[in-house]
Image 1 (tube, helix red, strand yellow):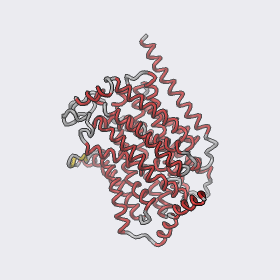
Image 2 (image 1 turned 90 degrees about the vertical axis):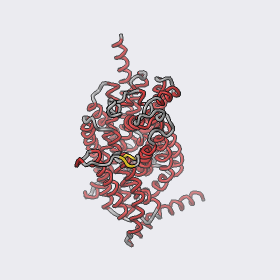
Image 3 (image 1 turned 90 degrees about the horizontal axis):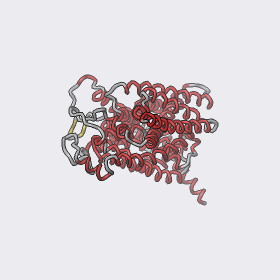
Image 4 (image 1 turned 60 degrees about the vertical axis):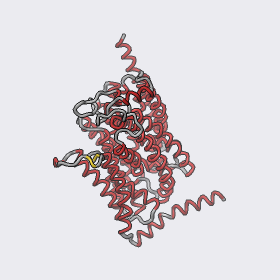
Length: 532
């Protein structure tokens, strides 16, 4: 009888999974004929409404990396105070990003006809070389992020279905490729909306169910207060600011401010319909982030109640990435099925955004300028080919890293976000508001963002040279790729204005910049006409 119940349990999980995957494919097929142009395929014809855009932003933001990797690792390190990361994601990564960047990004990118971030750098700063340089950065550093998404999902699938990691990764890549290659941005936007609703419902249900295993919220907090932190102290893991508020700030900066410079995130603003849509999208995306990110990190804060600590290292016995899957094991069958779909939803939406961003950058920014007479049909074929290529490369990397027990999901994501946002955040944001940004400042930001992340990775993560390096400074972890990424972003915000002030724009660049900034004047003129 016991075996019969186990079979029924597994069958219910498969039913939920198959229905979900079938729906994704149907949506991809439906939008195939509606994505006949490059503009439709990459940006949905710049006519996507506020709810779809807000959910696309949120679901691209939060994936299995957050739910499995970050929630587990930072919940273990900081306890319940890890919830501050979710709050930072909502206020800085969503609310402030939409308020500060949303409107100006939509106006300027539409005016200069930029479809990708590298194309923005070319047309904003009048430099094809910036487009090439930035497109290469996008392609290279989106791969480790994609690998981390596979990594997180496959660990949960192995727990729920007993399927080896490799097959989970390959299957997920195939399904993502099908609906993205078929339907482009419109298919991903509708899928993101459906996936977002699943994530909202799922995370609330999971939080209540998991806390219920230890007697509810109050009892769980009391139990966390009795657990020792890394320094052997009690009463810190259930406190407001936790055992290590200094390094917690680094996590908040990387995961919140980072979205301002990630191409797959800011390109959502390119596609939004109008100013009214931005106002609605701001509210919706912020509420989404509060529930999903806040819920994930809050849930992860109770990880030490579900997994034993290795007395030698102080780490969880099965590794950081096993914490959240371990918390899910005792959930009811249907709820576990919802969790699988929740994490799959989060991961596939992020993956679709990543592969679309990477393939469009390669095609539009690297291939098309070097191929004569490339029409739209050929451009779309090349773009779809690169989607498949990008997925194959990231699958190989994901399998390699999964076989290395030292690989941690949060490390892969930190390297990706640190390099991309460290390179792009400052020149992108300043470029929307300030005419005085110079090409030299943009190049400097690119070099510093990639350089800081790469050097740190070689010295601390890969440990090349076996140097005896300091591991902390005044309580701040120097070995943390999180802190390295956060530093790269903040450094860019300082170095771009400094270099811009000590270098000069050429007369033709000044003239070009003035023409670009006419976009805001023309937008105001259009509004005045509409009002009249």
